[in-house]
Length: 313
Image 1: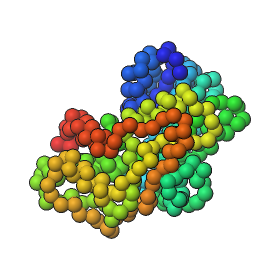
Image 2: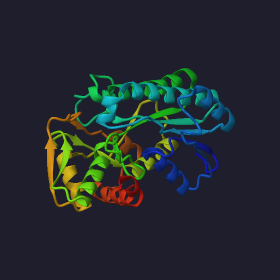
Image 3: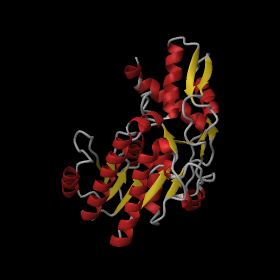
Image 4: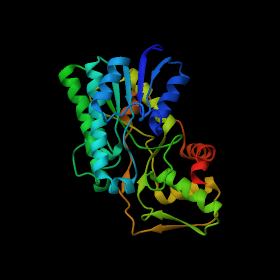
């Protein structure tokens, strides 16, 4: 990408897209294109085609998606598979029809089989059954990967797919009903502290292990791969280390300053037992994450305090 390349960030208000947009701005890219969902409905093919015909973006970061945690995935499976398939199909096809130079598709590590060996290697894709709680979302993301690969094979496009691990950071979703575990815990511990509650309840047993990548690190990885990688195979993006939900809860409790207890509701689902990605490929290409979990949690909590309290209170 050149500094004056026209770059479209789809989903620029979300956790991933906002970090990519910020990174591009900080690096001096001057022709950045983005639209809110009210300005451009990416599930509407006609709107997407008109937008691409008008703007003609050269590079596309496809970070727009319908996302959520276990609760949302269980409640709205049809919405997750339908909306994500529509968004991906419309944007990827419009990029091809308007001669875009390159597209980066953001997938998710939930695409891997539930019981795949750990850490998760790129070649484990489609070798076993998916985690039932997020299967519709995962199938949509797998379809996006296959669409990029198929367009590359048939049309000679340069579309790459990256699989980030669990993310957190600025512009995260802190809604207790639809958020992922880390931002949900930040909010739970904050509210418990403010309301002098004796304990915080955490879903599941606390034993599952998860890997967490700070969103601004992900953005740096995406820019790096957009500039350097042209392979047709997917690339994992992560830190190569994980932590149990129990230890994560303890860490967040400490960052927030909450003094009460932590109780685990074992009647609630745990999800996948472990989800750690193998980042050998990414590291060999020349990129490694730099933000530690302790540092990232402090930054995420500070962002929450500065930006989310009007919604919480």
